[in-house]
Structures are given as C-alpha cells and as structure tokens.
Amino acid sequence: MTHKPVQLVFVSQLLAIPTISPEKDFFIVIKVFAVDVILATDFIHVLSDAFENLTSSCLDDHP
Image (cartoon, rainbow, N blue to C red; front, side, top):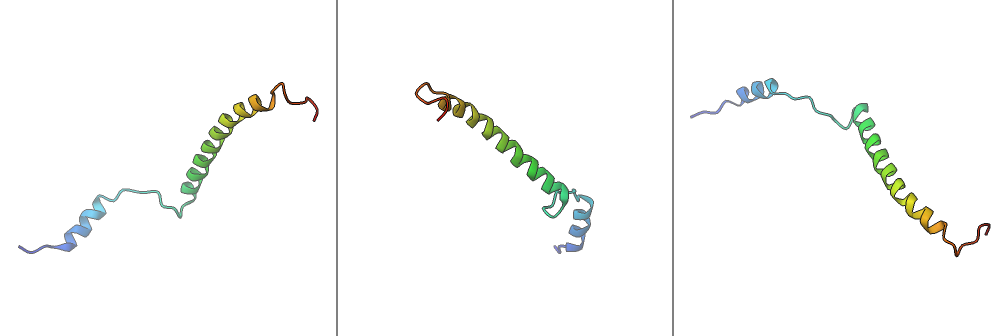
C-alpha cells in the first residue's frame, strides 16, 4: 500500500482554518485588551483594601 503525500496537501488546503497569528495587529489589540482587563480587576480589588487601611482611626488626617 503506497501513501500519497500530495493528497494530504490538498486536504490541508481544503480544511484550512484562518488563525490569529502573533504578527498581526489584531492579535496585539486582543493581548493589550486582555492585559488591561486583568490590571483593572486587580486595581479594583486592591483599591478597597487600600481605602480600609488608609482610613484607619490611628492615622492622622494630615500627616
């Protein structure tokens, strides 16, 4: 039984699915947006703790 690698090339061309490659600008936009979402989420979680700790009664109003 002989294998025909040429047929595999045609099958891969028929089943070609467009992918997002790192060289395209759209991929960079997606990465930047994802990083912004992560940073904003972290900031919101840290902000509430910071307000609780910095509004303690043992701290002076005007240091």
